[in-house]
Amino acid sequence: MARNHVTTTINGDPVEFLCDTEQTLLDVLRDELHLTGSKEGCASGDCGACSVTMDGRLVCACLVLAVETQGAEVETIEGMADGDRLHPLQQKFLDHAALQCGVCTPGFLVAAKSLLERNPDPTESEVRYWLAGNLCRCTGYDKIVRAVLDTAAEMRE
Image (cartoon, rainbow, N blue to C red):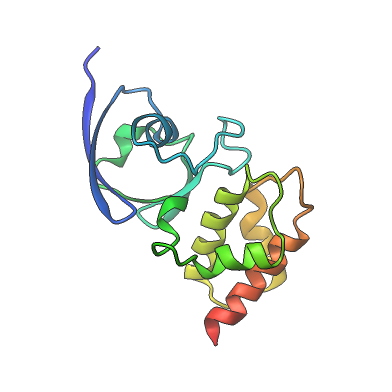
């Protein structure tokens, strides 16, 4: 079977890779590009652990075929920090102890960043609604929501 040559941008860097037609973006990120921050929780788009943005739109990487990223701009959890300087959301997740096992954390962070880019002053209901596609089996969500709201307030100052 012929492999597809894909040229895209990931976390601001031009990237080229070869993939099979049926390979998902998540598989290519993890297995071919060694960007293992996005996690596979369900492989059906139900948990949000593999959330990334593609051309500014929040998507589950397990539901996007890698060939669909041709010419696209993809942002993953690896692109959030600026070198050793954490993104404010990452810092607030630590400050609020909004993570436990860590499987869901990258997806929550990418989704929350996407929300704050669209709405820098969300209500608690808006945060909960926006993050409803991300499942966590450890934290109970309250600390996650508080971390997002605290980040929003800090970023507006």
